[in-house]
Image (tube, rainbow, N blue to C red; front, side):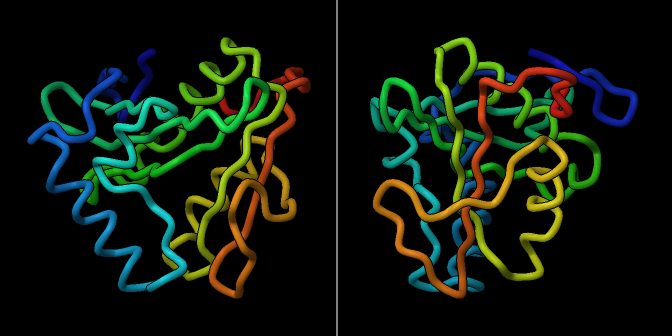
Length: 168
């Protein structure tokens, strides 16, 4: 799936989270979350993103890595958005929206009824939270093995609702 990134053409590719071209952005992502959330940072490292239940994609602006995101299967009808990140240079250019749209489309294709996500509450998470809400995600309780805290919050998208899908 491809979409615009400030007038350019973006490509979303299934990829290897352990690939050298992902390493710096993934390390930045994990370090930033750890600095802000400490033990409440649940982002997956390359080995976690390589699990059989996880599909990982990268977003490209020509030959430049613009971001990444993943979809984890929790059950045959339930998926989880994991580790969405735009590169610092690509923030505000629609990369997150394109990756999220790709993940939602894949979840629908797989027949998931629900898509969930966990994210932080720090100021750094505000753009992502705004994106999720604009895509139709609503607040919900903890899911899977997550424990609620002052440092995290939970969202879900009912995939049975497809009218005027705002992610696209």
